Amino acid sequence: MSNKYTTNKNAIADCDVCGFQFKLRELKDLYVRQTNTHVKACKECWNPDQPQNMQGMYPVEDPQAVRDPRPDQSFNEII
Image 1 (cartoon, rainbow, N blue to C red):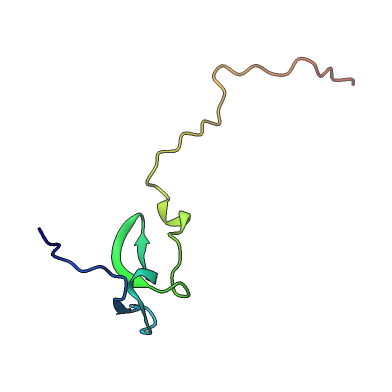
Image 2 (cartoon, rainbow, N blue to C red; image 1 turned 45 degrees about the vertical axis):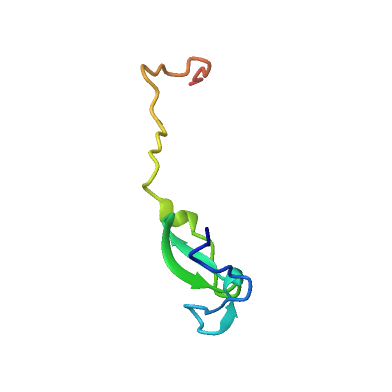
């Protein structure tokens, strides 16, 4: 049984960002918010997905208040 696709060993493709020709295996996919955009970019144009774009995707619980707080009794005020 034969393969439907050829190997990309010698395939040439254009960078979708700058338009120059590169080997297809040298191009990388661009991701935005962990979603593949199917845009192929060369190593000069490729940027990793920024962590700032993931803001709000994961719940963050950072409690600040203390339940039943008590005043500090170790400080004696001298008048």
